[in-house]
Length: 324
Figure 1 (cartoon, rainbow, N blue to C red):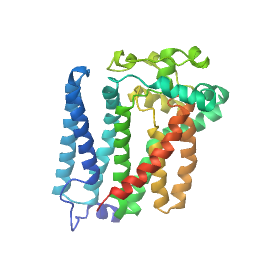
Figure 2: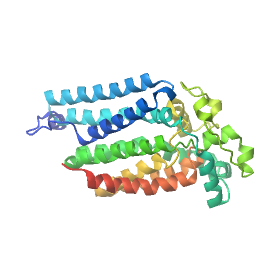
Figure 3: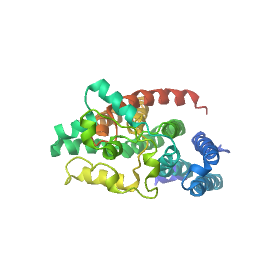
Figure 4: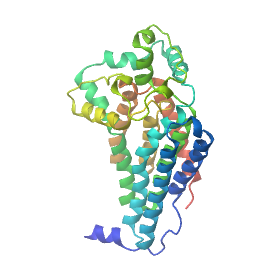
């Protein structure tokens, strides 16, 4: 009851305008709306894309209105949660925007070959094909959203004075990743290797695909358009991973890995929280996440490495940019 009273207690000085994280969404929506208008004739369903942005704005205003009517911690949390949940719509939207550009996977696969002498995404899953390794790594991968939620909830309940800043850092990092994904159309091994054939990849040949992905059916991608997910098919975490992929995976967002990047941001926030239990619980999951990205063939290894650097940069950038 004490917790409930604390959540419902009216704030003495409620926030009047939009939150910084809501402004981040508005800025991203406005930026991509300009892109949609400029590329209107080349997009498959620009009307639906504009409608989705309208829905995001209506949701934001509705949650803001609920908070203004009853300004408390619970309605403020609802404003943050609404933006986080809507990220599930923004992610596949990047594919609808970047598919009009020539695909760049050949360049990244060649860079991978030059750096390692082979394709980690092609060999790692076969070298370590045991159920134990599969379940460990897929556990790391499916822990992505729980790790984000854990850090946000920790700040909400135990570091409330920094909750909005932490949420802003995470959400703004997501949107900056999405801007990169729009401008840098890299589909990742699971789509590129399937499109050109793993035999060619194993021989060190990396054909350019041009507008191949723009010509794919643009409603729901068929499973034969991507490599089958490697791993132990009877495993619990493998099945969870398959469900997540079936829900909204698209040939987009490969470089840099936002899974690794956002996880890096979340680790920095966990360190800032000065809670060893939280940090030391998340570090092993983050390590598993790193290797899982190319074990399941969602990313090139260089995507994961770049994710570490970009995630760290975003944490410090948005930490500096945030103002109360």
